[in-house]
Image (tube, rainbow, N blue to C red):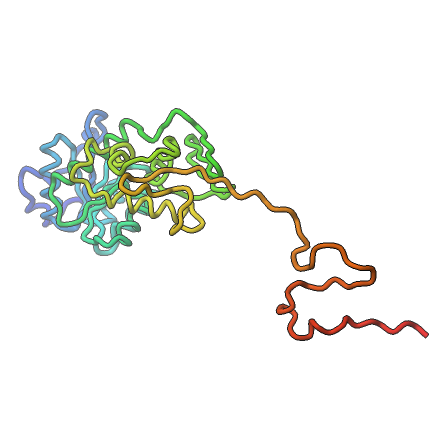
Amino acid sequence: MGQKAQGSERDQAPPPVQEDAELPSSSLDTEDVVRVLVVDDEKMVRSLLSISLQRLGYQVVMAANGREALELFEQHDFDLVLLDVIMPDLDGFAVCKQLRKISAVPILMLTALNRPDDIVRGLELGADNYVTKPFTFKEVEARIRAILRRTSNKLDEQAFQVIELGDVRLNSEQRTVSVAGRMISLTRTEFRLLQYLMANANRPVSKQDLLENVWGYESADGINSNLVELAIRRLRKKLEEDPSQPQRLVTVRGVGYKFCVHAPPAPGPLTSGSYQAGSRRRGQELRPTSRASLGDDSRRRPLRLPSPS
């Protein structure tokens, strides 16, 4: 870690945190240690998170702003990033976007913005989960364990490589999804959610089941099910023609959700469309069925050219 990580603020950090100490690169590259990058502009939050994480056996590196976080990320490998949203100069949304361009590292957003739109924005940028401030460390710990468990177990890898149900085609090897032949872009969480629902097609899946198998929680007790609802809402916007009347991701009242196989309607027989169907008498002109489209002049007889004299 360079001299950029030092400063008067860090010189006053509590001794257990040792935030101003330069860690050798070898200590950051140990395979059997979970390395966490904590990014927050509030010194108190950084210190509390660092102390708590170190007591759990994690190795912690801290950054006081977004630019410092990106510099540290380029220098070392991390297993998890705890990322504050509201920071000066370069906020958490911008940092998350930059990280997703170069890495699939799990990102847990720490935010005081608890509006659904703000949470959705972070998730769509590639964050794996979020915790709203103020929070307890027990909540943070539960989400960290869920993310790391999901990462280590690779729960997103199912036995099938390609599954095609109705007009939805999912390729888990290439991580692509198409609907009626149209490719759609999904976040990692949205991909895992759709993959799990398609693997259990036409069977109701509870929110608790989704929290445990998609998000990786050992127990869904105490976890806000709004996390699932927001993800389903985002997924419907990408899969459904009318998200308010879903045909593929259906709500099962009192249970949860299920993926229903939706086949596109078969094309009907070709018709003349704008012209009357059926036979006509010899010499009779074809007329549009909708006179309104032609105005009042549609009642006039068609013009006939005079015959040459």
